[in-house]
Length: 445
Ligand code: GAP
Image (cartoon, rainbow, N blue to C red):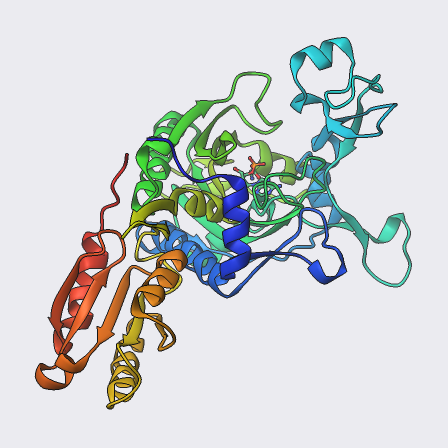
């Protein structure tokens, strides 16, 4: 069955329901910058927390870090970003549109014609993607700093600090989540590619003789992560980088791709970065960043297997994956089928009517559930409409308090996906929801 999600529908739902808004909209917006609204920030936080728990708590020997966004400018010389981190840029001499040369159709590349108007294209110029700014009151070459284009370098420059202060032994990993910035030329497809975004990266330091083994291990782990996140497995595939695609630091790389409404595109990269980064930092800083194995007494520069995921891009994948439409009682329904552990609101609480003490009782039940779940109380409008509003927000459980509740202390629990309704004792409600969240399985069609 064709996937009902399109980018237009997603962008409009995100604005309507408060997931994502255009940045500075009242001033006409800022291209490629987006703000996360009340539901969007909850969703992003849940994905972030899930990744963090998976990568740190649930793995042996992975510790966390939160490095600064602005770093010593030498970091980016050593990393190769000053020299190599650029895109080839071409302009149309007629319509003035600007493209990344590697992203225009091959026939336009060969004929040097504009994909939009057929005009003549300029020769390609290399355009460095790093944002430059200055620290201090004088804006000269001596005060230049860059906004980091990846979080990884904060990990490499702290490699020695971490291993000396945390008693970790190779193989071990350092995980970090944070903002990264790239002056991207192509800025379409909503939050897919933006100038300011968030990455969830982990650098795993290994003995060089074990690179194949750990590469395969991490590729498998990261593939499994998206299953756990509730993303349909049929929507994820692997793509190995050919020699022309490999980044300047990589010996081997795979992308995990997701089938977005606009096609298959990269969601995460798993890279064998060899000893490239640590060796370059040894060369540029003059510091010894070797690791001493206290068992074998071998001294060496560890190699790195990196897993690098985009948090904001994962939000888009989760939104695209969740979007669904069906028909209920002859009326179309939009439903966001988030995994319950990611849903911004876990349970909607609805008194059937406001009068006869039902609203007070519903408030009381909401306060009980709030201890364990994110809840939303709604007493406005027909019950069907209230359900539908929560379906669109992706709330997996609806709880209705009615006259029977007053008599026997039971409530109606409604499941978002199947719309099945069951009667549950009030004191069993939290446990029933917790179990359903744990057992949840999305239908992959
Ligand atoms: N440290 C390695 C690194 O940064 P990358 O393939 O350039 O590798 C990793 O980026 C991930 O970061 C991508 O798979 C994507 O999810 C995310 N990402 C990169 N550029 C992005 C952008 N402009 N907007 C949103 N996400 C981006």
